Image (cartoon, rainbow, N blue to C red):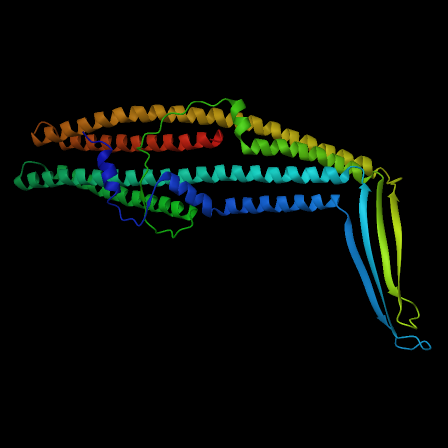
Length: 412
Protein backbone atom coordinates (compact mmCIF):
# COMPACT_ATOMS: atom_id res chain seq x y z
CA UNK A 1 0.00 0.00 0.00
CA UNK A 2 1.42 3.38 -1.04
CA UNK A 3 1.33 5.88 1.80
CA UNK A 4 2.60 9.42 2.32
CA UNK A 5 5.59 7.91 4.12
CA UNK A 6 7.58 7.37 0.94
CA UNK A 7 6.91 10.98 -0.06
CA UNK A 8 8.12 12.31 3.28
CA UNK A 9 11.26 10.20 2.99
CA UNK A 10 11.97 11.66 -0.43
CA UNK A 11 11.61 15.21 0.87
CA UNK A 12 14.70 14.87 3.03
CA UNK A 13 16.72 13.71 0.04
CA UNK A 14 16.27 17.13 -1.59
CA UNK A 15 19.35 19.34 -1.52
CA UNK A 16 18.95 21.95 1.17
CA UNK A 17 20.95 24.28 3.33
CA UNK A 18 18.55 24.87 6.21
CA UNK A 19 15.96 23.06 8.28
CA UNK A 20 13.02 25.23 9.26
CA UNK A 21 9.88 24.50 11.26
CA UNK A 22 6.66 26.42 10.71
CA UNK A 23 7.08 28.33 14.00
CA UNK A 24 10.69 29.24 13.21
CA UNK A 25 9.72 30.41 9.75
CA UNK A 26 6.90 32.59 11.09
CA UNK A 27 9.26 34.29 13.54
CA UNK A 28 11.90 34.73 10.87
CA UNK A 29 9.45 36.36 8.47
CA UNK A 30 7.96 38.59 11.17
CA UNK A 31 11.38 39.76 12.33
CA UNK A 32 12.50 40.66 8.79
CA UNK A 33 9.23 41.87 7.27
CA UNK A 34 9.36 45.40 5.87
CA UNK A 35 5.60 45.66 6.37
CA UNK A 36 5.95 44.95 10.09
CA UNK A 37 8.94 47.30 10.30
CA UNK A 38 6.96 50.05 8.58
CA UNK A 39 4.01 49.53 10.93
CA UNK A 40 6.36 49.74 13.90
CA UNK A 41 7.82 53.01 12.60
CA UNK A 42 4.31 54.38 12.15
CA UNK A 43 3.50 53.42 15.74
CA UNK A 44 6.64 55.17 16.99
CA UNK A 45 5.76 58.25 14.93
CA UNK A 46 2.26 58.33 16.43
CA UNK A 47 3.72 58.03 19.93
CA UNK A 48 6.13 60.89 19.26
CA UNK A 49 3.23 63.01 18.00
CA UNK A 50 1.28 62.28 21.18
CA UNK A 51 4.24 63.56 23.18
CA UNK A 52 4.26 66.71 21.08
CA UNK A 53 0.61 67.32 21.97
CA UNK A 54 1.38 66.62 25.63
CA UNK A 55 3.87 69.49 25.75
CA UNK A 56 1.00 71.91 25.07
CA UNK A 57 0.02 71.54 28.75
CA UNK A 58 3.29 73.11 29.87
CA UNK A 59 4.41 76.73 29.70
CA UNK A 60 6.52 77.96 26.82
CA UNK A 61 9.92 79.34 27.76
CA UNK A 62 11.68 81.41 25.13
CA UNK A 63 14.20 84.17 24.77
CA UNK A 64 15.21 86.57 22.09
CA UNK A 65 18.06 88.99 21.91
CA UNK A 66 19.93 91.41 19.72
CA UNK A 67 23.29 93.03 19.56
CA UNK A 68 23.75 96.30 17.72
CA UNK A 69 26.64 98.47 16.76
CA UNK A 70 26.46 101.84 15.11
CA UNK A 71 28.59 103.17 12.27
CA UNK A 72 28.56 106.75 13.56
CA UNK A 73 29.33 107.84 17.14
CA UNK A 74 26.71 109.90 18.99
CA UNK A 75 28.74 112.20 21.17
CA UNK A 76 30.69 110.22 23.74
CA UNK A 77 28.27 107.19 23.59
CA UNK A 78 29.58 103.75 22.82
CA UNK A 79 28.89 102.33 19.41
CA UNK A 80 27.50 99.05 20.70
CA UNK A 81 24.44 97.88 22.66
CA UNK A 82 22.42 94.73 23.36
CA UNK A 83 18.97 93.63 24.39
CA UNK A 84 17.96 90.21 25.87
CA UNK A 85 14.26 89.39 26.36
CA UNK A 86 13.28 86.15 28.15
CA UNK A 87 9.61 85.13 28.15
CA UNK A 88 7.45 82.57 29.94
CA UNK A 89 3.90 82.03 28.70
CA UNK A 90 1.22 79.60 29.88
CA UNK A 91 -2.00 78.83 28.08
CA UNK A 92 -4.69 78.98 30.76
CA UNK A 93 -7.74 78.20 28.66
CA UNK A 94 -7.93 77.25 24.97
CA UNK A 95 -11.53 76.21 24.76
CA UNK A 96 -10.66 72.56 25.51
CA UNK A 97 -8.49 72.29 22.40
CA UNK A 98 -5.29 71.21 24.16
CA UNK A 99 -6.87 68.36 26.10
CA UNK A 100 -8.94 67.16 23.14
CA UNK A 101 -5.94 67.23 20.80
CA UNK A 102 -3.83 65.29 23.28
CA UNK A 103 -6.48 62.60 23.81
CA UNK A 104 -6.93 62.35 20.05
CA UNK A 105 -3.18 61.84 19.57
CA UNK A 106 -3.13 59.14 22.27
CA UNK A 107 -5.94 57.32 20.47
CA UNK A 108 -4.09 57.59 17.18
CA UNK A 109 -1.07 56.00 18.82
CA UNK A 110 -3.31 53.18 20.10
CA UNK A 111 -4.72 52.81 16.58
CA UNK A 112 -1.20 52.55 15.17
CA UNK A 113 -0.40 49.82 17.69
CA UNK A 114 -3.51 47.88 16.68
CA UNK A 115 -2.66 48.35 13.01
CA UNK A 116 0.77 46.91 13.75
CA UNK A 117 -0.85 43.88 15.37
CA UNK A 118 -3.11 43.42 12.35
CA UNK A 119 -0.12 43.69 10.02
CA UNK A 120 1.61 40.97 12.02
CA UNK A 121 -1.46 38.73 11.65
CA UNK A 122 -1.47 39.28 7.88
CA UNK A 123 2.27 38.67 7.54
CA UNK A 124 2.00 35.56 9.70
CA UNK A 125 -0.69 34.19 7.39
CA UNK A 126 1.45 35.00 4.34
CA UNK A 127 4.29 33.07 5.97
CA UNK A 128 1.99 30.09 6.62
CA UNK A 129 0.74 30.17 3.04
CA UNK A 130 4.30 30.24 1.66
CA UNK A 131 5.42 27.45 4.00
CA UNK A 132 2.50 25.17 3.16
CA UNK A 133 3.00 26.00 -0.52
CA UNK A 134 6.59 24.73 -0.46
CA UNK A 135 5.48 21.65 1.50
CA UNK A 136 2.77 20.90 -1.06
CA UNK A 137 5.10 21.41 -4.03
CA UNK A 138 7.69 19.11 -2.47
CA UNK A 139 5.00 16.43 -2.15
CA UNK A 140 3.81 17.04 -5.72
CA UNK A 141 7.40 16.74 -6.94
CA UNK A 142 8.00 13.57 -4.95
CA UNK A 143 4.73 12.06 -6.23
CA UNK A 144 5.66 12.92 -9.81
CA UNK A 145 9.09 11.34 -9.35
CA UNK A 146 7.40 8.18 -8.06
CA UNK A 147 4.96 8.27 -10.98
CA UNK A 148 7.85 8.43 -13.45
CA UNK A 149 9.50 5.46 -11.71
CA UNK A 150 6.29 3.43 -11.89
CA UNK A 151 5.85 4.05 -15.62
CA UNK A 152 9.54 3.48 -16.30
CA UNK A 153 9.37 0.09 -14.57
CA UNK A 154 6.36 -0.78 -16.73
CA UNK A 155 8.20 0.43 -19.82
CA UNK A 156 11.13 -1.86 -19.00
CA UNK A 157 8.79 -4.85 -18.72
CA UNK A 158 6.93 -4.04 -21.95
CA UNK A 159 10.18 -3.42 -23.80
CA UNK A 160 11.51 -6.77 -22.67
CA UNK A 161 8.32 -8.55 -23.78
CA UNK A 162 8.35 -6.69 -27.09
CA UNK A 163 11.87 -7.94 -27.68
CA UNK A 164 10.64 -11.48 -26.98
CA UNK A 165 7.69 -10.99 -29.36
CA UNK A 166 4.94 -11.23 -26.71
CA UNK A 167 3.49 -7.70 -27.12
CA UNK A 168 2.73 -5.49 -30.09
CA UNK A 169 4.75 -2.43 -31.05
CA UNK A 170 1.69 -0.27 -30.38
CA UNK A 171 1.72 -1.26 -26.69
CA UNK A 172 5.36 -0.23 -26.41
CA UNK A 173 4.63 3.14 -28.06
CA UNK A 174 1.71 3.78 -25.70
CA UNK A 175 3.86 3.21 -22.63
CA UNK A 176 6.69 5.26 -24.12
CA UNK A 177 4.30 8.17 -24.78
CA UNK A 178 3.00 7.94 -21.21
CA UNK A 179 6.57 8.00 -19.88
CA UNK A 180 7.38 11.06 -21.95
CA UNK A 181 4.26 12.82 -20.67
CA UNK A 182 5.16 11.98 -17.06
CA UNK A 183 8.68 13.37 -17.49
CA UNK A 184 7.21 16.54 -19.00
CA UNK A 185 4.91 16.89 -15.98
CA UNK A 186 7.89 16.44 -13.68
CA UNK A 187 9.63 19.41 -15.32
CA UNK A 188 6.52 21.58 -14.90
CA UNK A 189 6.15 20.57 -11.24
CA UNK A 190 9.83 21.33 -10.66
CA UNK A 191 9.24 24.84 -12.06
CA UNK A 192 6.27 25.32 -9.74
CA UNK A 193 8.37 24.12 -6.81
CA UNK A 194 11.11 26.61 -7.67
CA UNK A 195 8.54 29.43 -7.79
CA UNK A 196 7.16 28.42 -4.38
CA UNK A 197 10.70 28.30 -2.99
CA UNK A 198 11.44 31.76 -4.39
CA UNK A 199 8.38 33.18 -2.61
CA UNK A 200 9.32 31.31 0.56
CA UNK A 201 12.81 32.84 0.58
CA UNK A 202 11.60 36.25 -0.53
CA UNK A 203 9.36 36.57 2.52
CA UNK A 204 12.28 35.90 4.84
CA UNK A 205 14.58 38.05 2.66
CA UNK A 206 17.02 35.29 1.80
CA UNK A 207 18.55 34.45 -1.61
CA UNK A 208 15.89 33.02 -3.93
CA UNK A 209 17.88 29.87 -4.66
CA UNK A 210 18.54 28.95 -1.04
CA UNK A 211 17.28 25.40 -0.46
CA UNK A 212 15.32 24.32 2.57
CA UNK A 213 14.21 21.22 4.45
CA UNK A 214 10.86 21.68 6.14
CA UNK A 215 10.51 20.01 9.51
CA UNK A 216 6.76 20.64 9.41
CA UNK A 217 4.51 19.45 6.59
CA UNK A 218 0.95 19.50 5.36
CA UNK A 219 0.87 15.78 6.12
CA UNK A 220 1.28 16.57 9.81
CA UNK A 221 -1.86 16.25 11.89
CA UNK A 222 -3.67 19.55 12.44
CA UNK A 223 -6.73 19.20 14.61
CA UNK A 224 -9.98 20.74 13.43
CA UNK A 225 -10.39 23.95 15.46
CA UNK A 226 -13.57 24.93 17.26
CA UNK A 227 -15.71 27.57 15.64
CA UNK A 228 -15.38 31.03 17.14
CA UNK A 229 -18.40 33.27 17.63
CA UNK A 230 -18.60 36.65 15.93
CA UNK A 231 -18.60 38.45 19.28
CA UNK A 232 -15.34 36.77 20.29
CA UNK A 233 -13.76 37.65 16.96
CA UNK A 234 -14.75 41.31 17.22
CA UNK A 235 -13.17 41.46 20.68
CA UNK A 236 -9.93 39.94 19.37
CA UNK A 237 -9.43 41.57 15.99
CA UNK A 238 -6.89 44.43 16.08
CA UNK A 239 -8.45 46.14 13.06
CA UNK A 240 -11.81 46.28 14.86
CA UNK A 241 -10.20 47.82 17.94
CA UNK A 242 -8.42 50.32 15.68
CA UNK A 243 -11.69 51.24 13.95
CA UNK A 244 -13.45 51.68 17.32
CA UNK A 245 -10.66 53.96 18.51
CA UNK A 246 -10.91 55.79 15.19
CA UNK A 247 -14.52 56.70 15.96
CA UNK A 248 -13.55 58.11 19.36
CA UNK A 249 -10.59 59.96 17.85
CA UNK A 250 -12.91 61.52 15.28
CA UNK A 251 -15.23 62.65 18.10
CA UNK A 252 -12.28 64.36 19.76
CA UNK A 253 -11.57 65.90 16.36
CA UNK A 254 -14.98 67.61 16.58
CA UNK A 255 -14.00 69.05 19.96
CA UNK A 256 -10.68 70.27 18.56
CA UNK A 257 -12.50 72.00 15.71
CA UNK A 258 -15.03 73.60 18.04
CA UNK A 259 -12.32 74.75 20.43
CA UNK A 260 -10.49 76.53 17.64
CA UNK A 261 -13.32 79.08 17.58
CA UNK A 262 -13.71 79.38 21.36
CA UNK A 263 -12.16 82.21 23.44
CA UNK A 264 -8.64 81.56 24.68
CA UNK A 265 -6.80 82.99 27.66
CA UNK A 266 -3.07 83.01 28.31
CA UNK A 267 -0.74 84.65 30.77
CA UNK A 268 2.97 85.22 30.74
CA UNK A 269 5.91 87.06 32.19
CA UNK A 270 8.43 88.78 29.98
CA UNK A 271 11.58 90.61 30.88
CA UNK A 272 14.29 92.69 29.34
CA UNK A 273 18.00 93.11 30.08
CA UNK A 274 19.56 95.76 27.94
CA UNK A 275 21.92 98.67 27.70
CA UNK A 276 20.77 102.27 27.81
CA UNK A 277 20.30 104.03 24.52
CA UNK A 278 22.43 105.84 23.74
CA UNK A 279 25.05 103.81 25.63
CA UNK A 280 27.18 106.42 27.44
CA UNK A 281 28.45 104.30 30.35
CA UNK A 282 28.01 100.62 29.30
CA UNK A 283 25.51 100.29 32.13
CA UNK A 284 22.50 97.95 31.81
CA UNK A 285 19.09 97.75 33.39
CA UNK A 286 16.37 95.16 33.96
CA UNK A 287 12.71 95.55 33.11
CA UNK A 288 9.76 93.19 33.21
CA UNK A 289 6.06 92.88 32.56
CA UNK A 290 3.12 90.59 33.26
CA UNK A 291 1.15 89.90 30.11
CA UNK A 292 -2.39 88.53 30.02
CA UNK A 293 -3.78 87.73 26.59
CA UNK A 294 -7.41 87.16 25.67
CA UNK A 295 -8.61 86.15 22.22
CA UNK A 296 -12.33 86.13 21.40
CA UNK A 297 -13.41 85.05 17.89
CA UNK A 298 -16.37 87.14 16.82
CA UNK A 299 -17.34 86.49 13.21
CA UNK A 300 -15.87 84.17 10.57
CA UNK A 301 -18.62 84.09 7.94
CA UNK A 302 -19.94 80.72 9.13
CA UNK A 303 -16.51 79.07 9.02
CA UNK A 304 -16.95 77.52 12.47
CA UNK A 305 -20.29 75.98 11.57
CA UNK A 306 -18.98 74.42 8.35
CA UNK A 307 -15.76 73.19 9.96
CA UNK A 308 -17.67 71.50 12.79
CA UNK A 309 -20.10 69.96 10.30
CA UNK A 310 -17.18 68.52 8.32
CA UNK A 311 -15.67 67.09 11.52
CA UNK A 312 -18.99 65.47 12.46
CA UNK A 313 -19.28 63.94 9.00
CA UNK A 314 -15.86 62.40 9.62
CA UNK A 315 -17.25 60.77 12.78
CA UNK A 316 -20.12 59.33 10.74
CA UNK A 317 -17.69 58.01 8.14
CA UNK A 318 -15.67 56.26 10.84
CA UNK A 319 -18.86 54.71 12.22
CA UNK A 320 -19.81 53.48 8.73
CA UNK A 321 -16.32 52.04 8.31
CA UNK A 322 -16.67 50.21 11.62
CA UNK A 323 -20.05 48.78 10.65
CA UNK A 324 -18.72 47.67 7.26
CA UNK A 325 -15.79 46.01 9.01
CA UNK A 326 -18.19 44.07 11.25
CA UNK A 327 -20.08 42.82 8.20
CA UNK A 328 -16.89 41.94 6.33
CA UNK A 329 -15.57 39.98 9.30
CA UNK A 330 -18.86 38.12 9.62
CA UNK A 331 -18.62 37.13 5.94
CA UNK A 332 -14.92 36.24 6.29
CA UNK A 333 -15.66 33.96 9.23
CA UNK A 334 -18.53 32.22 7.46
CA UNK A 335 -16.48 31.68 4.29
CA UNK A 336 -13.41 30.67 6.28
CA UNK A 337 -15.33 28.11 8.30
CA UNK A 338 -16.97 26.67 5.18
CA UNK A 339 -13.57 26.35 3.50
CA UNK A 340 -12.17 24.68 6.60
CA UNK A 341 -14.99 22.14 6.89
CA UNK A 342 -15.00 21.43 3.16
CA UNK A 343 -11.24 20.94 2.91
CA UNK A 344 -11.25 18.72 6.02
CA UNK A 345 -13.94 16.50 4.50
CA UNK A 346 -12.07 16.35 1.19
CA UNK A 347 -8.88 15.42 3.02
CA UNK A 348 -10.56 12.54 4.84
CA UNK A 349 -12.16 11.30 1.63
CA UNK A 350 -8.91 11.55 -0.34
CA UNK A 351 -7.07 9.33 2.12
CA UNK A 352 -9.55 6.52 1.50
CA UNK A 353 -9.33 7.07 -2.26
CA UNK A 354 -5.53 6.84 -2.20
CA UNK A 355 -5.74 3.45 -0.52
CA UNK A 356 -8.18 2.22 -3.17
CA UNK A 357 -6.11 3.58 -6.07
CA UNK A 358 -2.91 2.04 -4.67
CA UNK A 359 -4.50 -1.40 -4.39
CA UNK A 360 -6.00 -1.07 -7.87
CA UNK A 361 -2.58 -0.20 -9.30
CA UNK A 362 -0.93 -3.14 -7.56
CA UNK A 363 -3.61 -5.57 -8.81
CA UNK A 364 -3.48 -4.22 -12.39
CA UNK A 365 0.32 -4.45 -12.50
CA UNK A 366 0.29 -8.00 -11.16
CA UNK A 367 -2.48 -9.05 -13.57
CA UNK A 368 -0.53 -7.67 -16.53
CA UNK A 369 2.57 -9.58 -15.48
CA UNK A 370 0.44 -12.73 -15.34
CA UNK A 371 -1.07 -12.02 -18.76
CA UNK A 372 -4.56 -11.33 -17.39
CA UNK A 373 -4.70 -7.59 -18.15
CA UNK A 374 -3.69 -5.29 -20.99
CA UNK A 375 -1.23 -2.42 -21.03
CA UNK A 376 -4.17 -0.01 -21.26
CA UNK A 377 -5.52 -1.39 -17.99
CA UNK A 378 -2.22 -0.73 -16.26
CA UNK A 379 -1.85 2.74 -17.79
CA UNK A 380 -5.36 3.65 -16.70
CA UNK A 381 -4.63 2.45 -13.17
CA UNK A 382 -1.44 4.52 -13.13
CA UNK A 383 -3.28 7.64 -14.29
CA UNK A 384 -5.98 7.07 -11.71
CA UNK A 385 -3.34 6.66 -8.99
CA UNK A 386 -1.46 9.88 -9.78
CA UNK A 387 -4.69 11.88 -10.09
CA UNK A 388 -6.05 10.63 -6.78
CA UNK A 389 -2.68 11.07 -5.11
CA UNK A 390 -2.31 14.68 -6.28
CA UNK A 391 -5.92 15.29 -5.21
CA UNK A 392 -4.98 14.06 -1.76
CA UNK A 393 -2.02 16.44 -1.63
CA UNK A 394 -4.24 19.30 -2.84
CA UNK A 395 -6.81 18.49 -0.16
CA UNK A 396 -4.15 18.54 2.56
CA UNK A 397 -2.73 21.81 1.25
CA UNK A 398 -6.19 23.39 1.10
CA UNK A 399 -6.88 22.29 4.66
CA UNK A 400 -3.56 23.66 5.93
CA UNK A 401 -4.19 27.03 4.24
CA UNK A 402 -7.82 27.12 5.43
CA UNK A 403 -6.62 26.31 8.95
CA UNK A 404 -4.14 29.19 8.88
CA UNK A 405 -6.68 31.53 7.28
CA UNK A 406 -9.27 30.80 9.96
CA UNK A 407 -6.71 31.52 12.65
CA UNK A 408 -6.00 34.87 10.99
CA UNK A 409 -9.71 35.70 10.65
CA UNK A 410 -10.33 34.87 14.31
CA UNK A 411 -7.09 36.61 15.43
CA UNK A 412 -5.73 33.51 17.13
